[in-house]
Amino acid sequence: MSDDRLIVAMDVANVLDGLELAKTLGDSVSFYKIGLGMLCGGGLALANELKQEHDKRIFLDMKFFDIGATVEAAVRGVAQFNLDFLTVHGDPHVVRAAREGAGGSDMKILAVTILTSLDRDDLDASCIKAGDVADLVQERAGIALSNGADGVIASPQEAALIRALPEAKGKLIVTPGVRPAGAALGDQKRVMTPAQAIANGADHVVVGRPIWQAENPKAAAQSILAELASPQAETPNH
Image 1 (tube, rainbow, N blue to C red):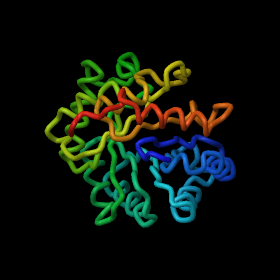
Image 2: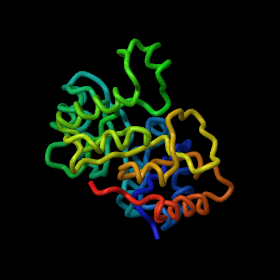
Image 3: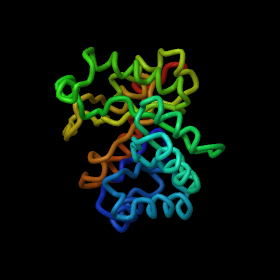
């Protein structure tokens, strides 16, 4: 049985590889993330095929950031495909524009807080204001949610802080930076296990390489699904 709390990041090279991965995972996985790395490899076509022909849920991870009019137009274009989630950066003008672009569609606008591959040294190098990363994530999440985001993207380490915000009531928290115990971190720096992420208040966990790079991707996915069904992943009331 699948569990749409698990979103598999389809960070493969092209449509054919993506369809092969989906075939391998079969009914075990119901939700896929397709991002910028796949865009020139037919990512949007793959998203539509998985959605329309295979009845999968789709998270299009574009992280739009531009002037308001451009973001609004881009989101309006994506909304016509009836996908499930779309990411934009969490700056207030971007979120407001995306909300307008989404119109009356069912597509959820998720705001990026601070990328899970960044730490305080990275923020310093980018001239981001001083402060603890978790505090900045919580602040950005509150701003994004109050400007119309349906949810936020944040590391599982910050999920509990965000869930505690009044603005987060009824909103989604989606956590990349999730790694099963013993898995390589790759380029992620602020990580937790799938069970820890859900227990901290996340609605969905995003897992990529530990699944699609595994010798047996389906078994890797099923192991994570079993963890999500365990008592360790009991979600607090929200």
